[in-house]
Image (tube, rainbow, N blue to C red; front, side, top):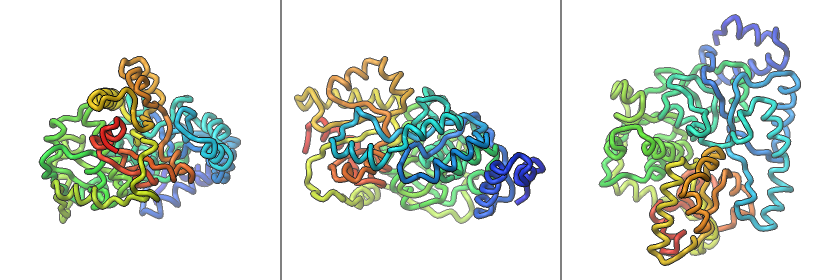
Length: 424
């Protein structure tokens, strides 16, 4: 790998042993993927995937202490993924005991470390840091050192930034050094599409289901999607961004997609069109039958497959302001149609703390509270990692949560009917 004089100086230890180790880590990481150089990070903020004070991560806390003691802190302020706990989310005594004594025992100490390293503020815990209320919105072309998969694919695809699917700790290493190795999605050739996906459905496909189908098919490759633009009204507005947020999260969790192009919608596809498609690209056609096949393939891993749901999570990734308002209206309308005043299943809608703070000023917030819906900043995935919680029949409209936990996936309309008492 070719290094600049500044980078070589850091690697040689001229700025201290700790900085040298950080640079060596990044160089070795880059060499594994064939990086030819290190490039400067250009975004104002970073984003870290590791947000939870899990007891088992002792080596991480020790490493962070070494970085802090050496003054090797982030050159950028950063946000981090959602907190794993919220007292407002239902948990019985046994579940709380496991959370507090065996799992997230280091949360308070860990958050203090993050503050010393450069955390933006005490609210900066969300997987959707790019929401305008949060303020960590990269510019087109920015070089990032992010690692949260759903955020990386959104930044690359919807915002036109450049970031690889890094691992936890590598994200903070890049931010400390100010450089990341250049390979993969940082390169023009790495952003070429090796799949053409044609959408031939009879109606707008569910974002989470479509993303799942594409993720499982293309795995880690880059798809160029044709035919979706008509369902997004041909523009990248707030509704389209919310759709692509959920779609991208499913491609990144049901596969390993770090970038997709949507014809006439996403920035690079608008600018470059089908010149983004690599020679020899494979083709995948998605119609109604294909989406049904994918949906029917999902396993139900509850011990009792006929169990009545006892908990529902909506918002993985975290919901936008518009989505919160939409769910509020839909839940209220469905409850009225079903002759109910309260939700039939304990339901948690999750969003970024800053979005939640802003949403509290809206009429729809009180509407949700009045019908028994819980609003939280929690990470549903971290909650479901509790082995006791895994046994609770939990439903969701998130394909990411379905993939990583025991939660059962339902389409939005079906989920709405269940939580408002329209069906068992």
